[in-house]
Image (cartoon, rainbow, N blue to C red; front, side):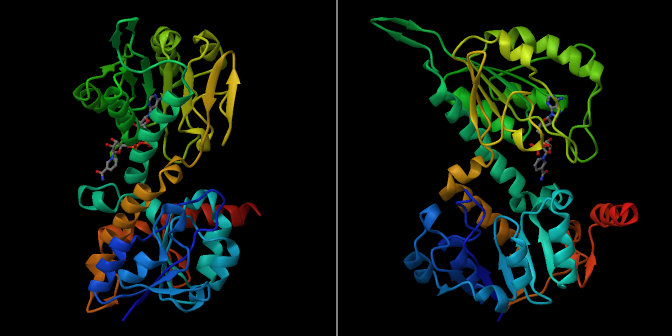
Length: 380
Ligand code: NAD
């Protein structure tokens, strides 16, 4: 019987948990022994009693050293990583390029790490995709945050005291977060326009009742993986000109534009912020990768030129119950195919596992990360 440990998250402001009572009971039904650290779900409103009822055994942090599988949301701290036993399986989010010391520690400790950020974005793996499930939450929460910072109503209201015009929203980037932001803003009654460098996004934007901002001479900047390629400075300039008028009239601007492995493109420079109406709001979801707005600050809400700019980093952690609900189902979907009679045996030939295994048996198995680490060694 494989033992699966769900620790309490220790990163500041992390409120999510990698298993809920629902997913615990599904692991237990598969014959897995689930150990949940006391209080692990408290910040997401999942009580110890609910985990026990679902079949988990409550425990303390000593399970870090004995469990065969550890599933968590954030990467472990260096101290936590040192507790993991050789051959242990760790399942969590890791951005390897940003956590090179941790990757080296996991490699040296003989830990097998499945990095949830690396799960291939193929149709079969959609149910395992934490980037999508958590981006959906970020897109939703970004609109609610903007609406609460805005001193104006979102929908068209016709009242005896007069008519309130709907709020105008401009969304940069129509990927998973951007599309959810469009849908949420539309549900609040806003008038929404959106832009993206991938032409495939146009149809999706329009199907949600928003207007796609066309950039003249737009070439399709979508790569084989469905992600955006880096746009030329010339394209970005044309895009800025095209959106400038809309941004100047907007009440809310939400930016979600990212390019994997690169700094986020600058789409809202200071002069664009200056052109906006007093009291309008920008929410920059790309703040962690450098920001789409030059004035946004990580984990701060600042006011510049009369515009409130929200740079809250971990928005899914502000909706911990459902963020954990979806995250834990992604983890279950990833591991369940490999559980038989209570024992977890990964198939490293499987396309999804092969795509997301970061370290295994003392080696860094993710080729781009291995290359990055060896380049660093050569430079050192
Ligand atoms: P992301 O977080 O990497 O980027 C967000 C959006 O920003 C993307 O739509 C990107 O095109 C856009 N962007 C980048 N540079 C821009 C610029 N200069 N101006 C405007 N927009 C810009 O993307 P994501 O949300 O992770 O999704 C990327 C793609 O992957 C989408 O096509 C999505 O449908 C696809 N996807 C597929 C699966 C799957 O099949 N399993 C799962 C999730 C996402």
